[in-house]
Amino acid sequence: MVHEKTRPMNNNLEQYRIRLSELGHQLEDPAIFSTPQKLSEVSREYNQVKEIVDKLDKIKNLGEKIRETEKIAESEKDPEILNLAREEIKKMETEKNEIQNEIKMALSPKNKLARKNVIMEIRAGTGGEEAALFAANLFQMYSHFAEKKGWQTEILDSNRTDLGGFKEITFRIVGLDAYKNLQSESGVHRVQRIPKTEKTGRIHTSTATVAVLPEAEEIDFKINPQDLKIDTFRSSGKGGQNVQKVESAVRITHLPTGLVVSCQDERFQQRNKDKALKILRSRLFLMEEEKRQREIETSRRTQIGQAKRAEKIRTYNFPQDRLTDHRLQKSWHNLPEIMNGNLDPIIEAFNK
Image 1 (cartoon, rainbow, N blue to C red):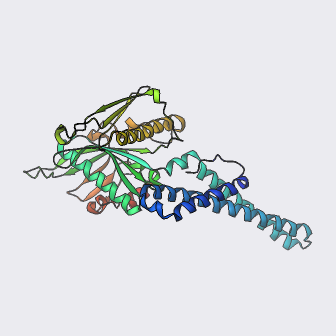
Image 2 (image 1 turned 90 degrees about the horizontal axis):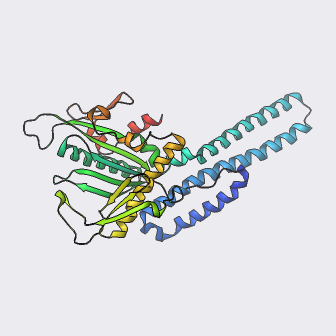
Image 3 (image 1 turned 180 degrees about the vertical axis):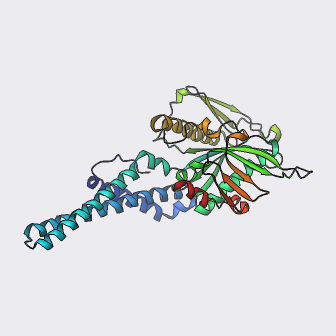
């Protein structure tokens, strides 16, 4: 990420050039391809820094052209040519100001948030096993969407059911503008369909909640170790049976807020701890952003609601092959394609 504060534009150009060169060397190193996550992160920052460098170059070139045109105007006696020169200067000044505003927007906290990776949490709501299966379908949908974008998906924690659904699953998506694209997915998703377990052919209505958190890095939010209570326990599998004899699972409680995060997917305690801290930091960061800027949803609890059918933001109606977003009051058809990750038309409707 570009962490520099906004200073006079031209003073930043050389610093950004140096950073762009550093990132370019990293991308040329064959070793980076053995770590897809690192490759994605470096590529993301490279694109961001290059965008800033290109804009600063345009400002520099416009400044030089403005000065050259001003010199011509000073010695010009023909009124018609003088007016043309003044109009050209005015046009270039306007373009220069527009690019400066674009840079300020690119470096603004809101834009930095939009470009972050995301941590998504999906939980089965009303509907029992069918809700858990729907939660799994949503995870697959977002995973396919990420794959189409060339992004990386990493499961951080999950709790599967016997039929292959998820009581809950937390995962990370690494990619440029991931939060910008996915933040509108927060809320209660409702499904109407005939479950695989239904023998009479009756349509059931179930829900799952989705929460989208911008991934926070240590530079974004530092956690005081004294504010944490860390417990370890044995991982459990489907149905709650014990699957390990060692206490590799980790539960972290943030004492000031009462937030609790658990991770048990990894076999090693330290990896589970690292993942739990990543989730906790992102939750705390989102809470802080909500208080400071009020540019995201009012709070994580408001995002996901209580998983009641009345709180739905979107309905997936399989018998009618229709997805309806109730915030936009708009519908799309071809649910199989949508569930296979074709979310671009819906996301583009939100970003207009």
